[in-house]
Image (cartoon, rainbow, N blue to C red):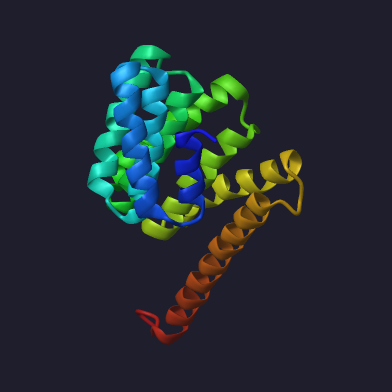
Length: 201
């Protein structure tokens, strides 16, 4: 097992401090042997950024993601899927920090780019749509814009991955939550109309 794979295993096991330490060793080693902008170095930096995000070290993760995006764009191009995937993770970090306008811009860029490259029903495109829809629903309360994205994710995941897949179920739950909250708002609005006396009667 390579050191990078060991770091990923530690991350998956929730041993984040150990994973961070190993990823930093990998980054240092690859920077020395391959260079700071080599794809392998950037992949290790991206892995480290994921760990930092899970640890709540969001500012540090944001800085690393920007570094990785810049390097991947220079090495592979803005439309390479490694670049797109890193941008998607970067948007997630921005979301966690409450930088919703910046996150929305990145999500839209990634969705547009993945749709052009792979199609609207590709699982990676659907991931971006789902994540953006969740931000609109949970952080901004924008159910009108969230619902079509969550519905596309639900239908798309079911077609590509199957009805019982975890992603399908997650999208379906979020869609149901969006509809439930909309229904509650409607009930509250109708109740307030009943309580408010008519003007001029």
